[in-house]
Image (tube, rainbow, N blue to C red; front, side, top):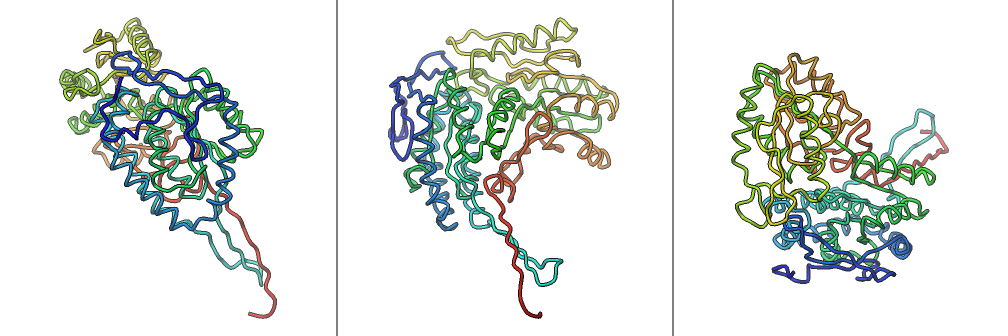
Length: 493
């Protein structure tokens, strides 16, 4: 299959190492499948653990030079990369549709969101500062400087591949680190397009590398990156189970680690909420990319006074969704990205029905062009014993849980091992502050379902991981060390 790209040079299917487009040592390739048709549309080189050494050595060599590059030069490089990404947005969006299945409009939205990180960190590159202050000890001065930590490895997921790469890489490159990206097996080509654009922006060889691989080779390649002594920083976005495994790989080397893991996020709607405002936010949050986002609303708690009314509003809006291939302009919700996603949604629905829940709309797989399509589904009377309450869905299933009191809602919302995002809708100011402080999550959406932005620190607590991405200062600091200097002065002052 040939993509109709405005610039065919943007299509890359080889690994990018040390400024060169290379094949795996094994010579093996793997197929890329369009989830909207279950058809192969491209192939890509299959890098393995044996291919990691060359990339790491090249990145380390490049780091020794890049770390000394003037911050303004790094800012200019990021700005040029940003401009090229925006220029290529139509072609990059097309690649995203065929890799992930998301509708074309959502693919464009991801690129706009993703490019906000290149723009933000281009400015942050020139704002990295140390401190200088007078010590409590007479005749002593203390100051700090910040320096890039070294080669960073980024292990990224398939649901927002461009955004996740740019959120990590932009901060790393602004700090003066070099980075090796291992994309998900489902979405390697968008990552390679970014590498091509980084090359065109002027980043020197070895500063930014991409190692595509299959699911079979992913564990060994990831382990090789995590355990290599020249890798000083690892950043991972994915499941809690894999995140803990990554942490165990990094522990012997005491590597600096950022983990953005599972969500199972609660969404609370109180009697005094603006229901249309809450519904607008929830529809976008829940059904964007067919529900496949770590920060999506997984458990929707609605106070009993508005429970039935809010359910009716959601059902009506869900009827207006149009399921189809992402390249169809009429499509508002695409397929799930992997075939396993269909089974998980079906399993959670059957479990809920068996435990007393009612399906208000949807509930079935859609037989359409052999794609991985599932009806947008809403279930009513969900309970805490159901798997939809205890596991992330990662699919187009919205579960409504009734509650009576604020205390009950907070207890239910916090009744999970995860703590990435929480959302609530209320017009009570006192309650707003109580919920902000009492909900156990790293990010709180207050009368909004859109709480992620380049200027906002992104990260969770509990089993949702640790460390922050994006935001002022904190994200760049994840790729830096602080060095303290102490000077003793002679003479009288």
